[in-house]
Amino acid sequence: MRTAAKVRIAGTGSYVPDRILDNEYFTRIVDTSDAWIIERTGVKERRIAPESQCTSDLAAEAARRALAAAGRTPQDVELIILATSTPDRIVPPTSVYVQKKLEAWNAGAVDHIAACSGYVYALSSGWNYVANRQVRNCLVIGSELLTRIANYTDRSTCILFGDAAGALLLEAADDGSSDILYSKLAADGRGEHLIIVPAGGTALQLTDERRANHLDTIQMQGREVYKFAITKFVELIQDAVKALGVTTEAIDALIPHQVNLRIIESAADKLKIPMSKIIVNIDRYGNTSAASIPVAIDEGVRAGRIQRGHLVVAVAFGAGLTWGSVALRW
Ligand code: COA
Image (tube, rainbow, N blue to C red; front, side):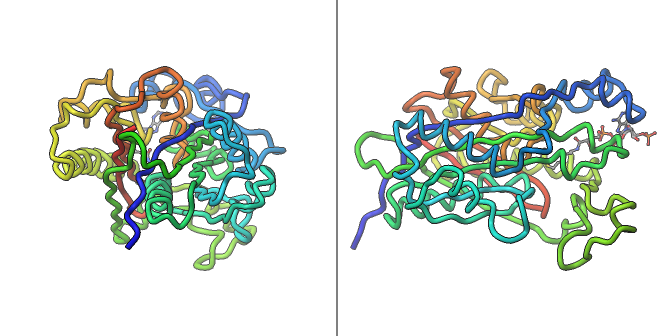
């Protein structure tokens, strides 16, 4: 019988578009203020991609950077998993455009859609493919163009979202102590209405009238989502440390989905995890859904805040409702 392979993160990369939307911009289009946005969300600015860029462009650039960091070429890649809720098209999967742009002709390609939890679902899948030795490596990418599905007449949501992509290259590596140790994936479909893009799928097709009513953009019950996110954040960490047989003190780097700075600070306080161990970039990028965790990981690695031997835990929660975590020895 084959034994499971250990899985190492061989390289990380991220990419954000150049153009910045600061809070001042929103004061010109909706009834809001820089002070309100910073106090309630922690967001100071976010990025917006030009029309010429699509989700696969951001993803391919993040992937190139992860491959360069790992010293690998696109031809080395055996599987691409892309987490996104803003695909280039409904068909085919966006991951095939990434494969084409990278010229990674030896790679299989599949998309994972689980909203803001998409990256932990994708990472967990990638871990299983590599640990089961079905592939020797897997590029796990999160890429989102949320500015394309934001409603710029709704002040309670449009201020939150930004565009970004991040990527990790997972490799089988039986030497050393690096490994993915634990993952939890969960969902509760009874909360499907809490964060929703109502039209554009098979349930409600897009018409001119529905577009005029913004039914092709994100609608959210912010308060409900806020309470859900704090509860799940705390539960996920408690479950992870219990399963690993450690306490929260053992966590060297915590990477939460960048949902709202107040949510992150409140959960950190409840868990007694110092903010110095938590990687936060919501101030610069806003909520980038499935891209937020790999971007934060890449920034943590490049800043030396995530190093070999560290216990790293990523937690996410979002539309669905969905939530999940991944813990790894870096
Ligand atoms: N500027 C000024 N006022 C705003 C505003 C804005 N951009 N957005 C909402 N408000 C107003 C509301 O209209 C409301 O006014 P009222 O009291 O007169 O009715 C007031 O601020 C409070 O609204 P509330 O929704 O209770 O605020 P909040 O403190 O919960 O903050 C969110 C709103 C959206 C920032 C917050 O709920 C949140 O971050 N939720 C999680 C959202 C998320 O990121 N989800 C993504 C998927 S994980």
